[in-house]
Image 1 (spheres, rainbow, N blue to C red):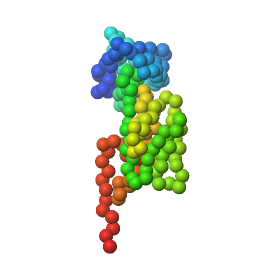
Image 2 (cartoon, rainbow, N blue to C red):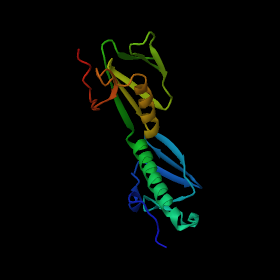
Image 3 (spheres, rainbow, N blue to C red):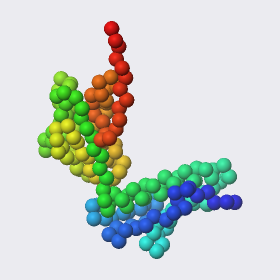
Image 4 (cartoon, rainbow, N blue to C red):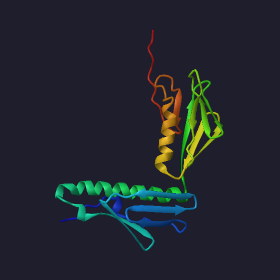
Length: 188
């Protein structure tokens, strides 16, 4: 039977010189200059380290029937991306930048809290997780930084959810460079 391999997983993941990778059982640990990340790997995927490269392949012993080969390929590509993001995170880090648009809308840091004034009757206070850094260089810009791509993206999405951009006026919180298509309002 032909092996099911994702298009991504055909290529090995290079390990930079300043990053250390360990695979113990079904847990992969990646250490770098910015920190350490761990992830549990599904038993459907096998990871091997050879010649300073990580090879991700499907676990063919888990293939019970031919129709299950597509699921193996999906999991292989997903874990390949997770491992590559872990390596990039501990060596370079990830960041998301948000823009706040609207009169009187602003953000500020107060200790370990991000305080947003978004037109509600009260300011919105968001607790910043320990593994993330938040910067507010201007009252209308918020930058979220961290080593875990999923945590950075989710925290930025949580901030954005407090005031999604209005399609008529364009007011709200958006990602930097995000284009909001505005609608024409009613004409009398």
